[in-house]
Image (tube, rainbow, N blue to C red; front, side, top):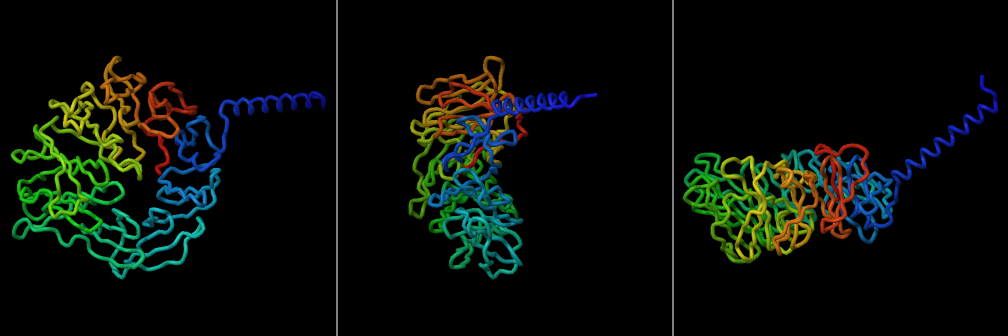
Length: 468
């Protein structure tokens, strides 16, 4: 039986042990606060926690992933995670939240939402970062069940409805059909969008390119470019559609900038999937009736594949394009087996292309990042002269690398095969996943540091950064 003094001694020992354990845990995994609105640019999501990439410490507040908008005057960050709008002050404290039900879409500046209701489009303002105002009816249609927004420029919302494009002005409530009817290619033949797809948008939403298919007869395809500023349409391959393949390939359309589009041009005698390609650069912003071709390239590396997903909202180019718009990264598959692929770089100024890696079994799905902004990516540009990428191979050739296009030199960062590269340019870091861990390196590939995650971070674990 314990005496009162021994019970007190036992309690003191337990208290000291728990205190020491808490202190050691705090030192092992310290918590930090956000100090300014700029700190949101340096957050990284992994292991169900939010890290400050500079200190590698987790922050206290839960911050959802999504697309972020900064309200500069109010010093507020708004974040859309597709189900809710969250609003935070400069210290990372939540000051408001708006729950969005199914079909509700916020405006690009997070000041109001639109949604379908009883066959029409309605609008509600966001009030004080925390609630929705009274409902306002924008249309008198009576047959609309869902919204598919393909572009949003100022007060103009562009919608894809049953294969047609409409423009709605949310201020004046004017609604008009965009581009008229699909063109006739032959008697009784009409073109409609492939799989009812929406246009592949340019940066800032100024232009869109879309592929059409004749559903009724021949299955012929055509490519059309739409200039949203004056609702002008350009038929890029009129007279070629009857061959069954488009002259220009929309799945490989690369936006060099908001007004410059790089297109692969098929051999008119062989269709798609051939061993001889050319390419063109066109400028849809010029006001000629005919779409001007700015530059043409002769045949180059056959059958390249591009990651043509756009970078973060305001960076103005496809992911594969260098910051100075001179170089494009591409993947080319082995002619014997599409399982094996290699990285290449195209120089648009010189009109040349070269393969920079051996053909290897690609561990990562190259097209994944087109559909999911948080999917693992196989490369990213660091600056205009260098990009980071990863390859499979043997012990000598596999790993994570930095390639410089100006000197054509390759630097090995790690033997680990990296994936999901995220550039934090203002902080001077690249963050990526490899070997089921998260690492941070300097922009030159030096000083590789591991994140203090508590469990393995595999490719099925959600990671990412806020997209501004």
